[in-house]
Image 1 (spheres, rainbow, N blue to C red):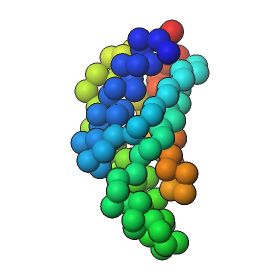
Image 2 (spheres, rainbow, N blue to C red):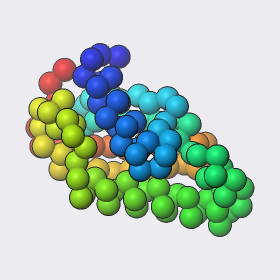
Image 3 (cartoon, rainbow, N blue to C red):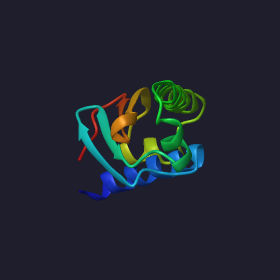
Image 4 (spheres, rainbow, N blue to C red):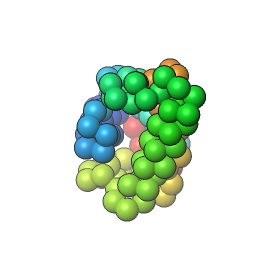
Length: 115
């Protein structure tokens, strides 16, 4: 993994830790054209794991995580993110698979990300 990916991962991890009180245990980012595709593992807090023991709990955690992430990035792009990739963030698509304790975010930028 290159310096740019590592720096991007650090920003995503820090943002998630600030939001949820816990960042991902493992995180990987791949840059493809104008996208940063970030896969995160070990995302759930102990409380979320407990709540997710029921189907209704899984739905609540999924909804809260995906909607909250999108809303927060709409309000404020994390400091340094656009500078690392050299382009403006246009869109964020994010989803979580609660059963697998993982999430994927696809960040779409204005320009192709130079490696």
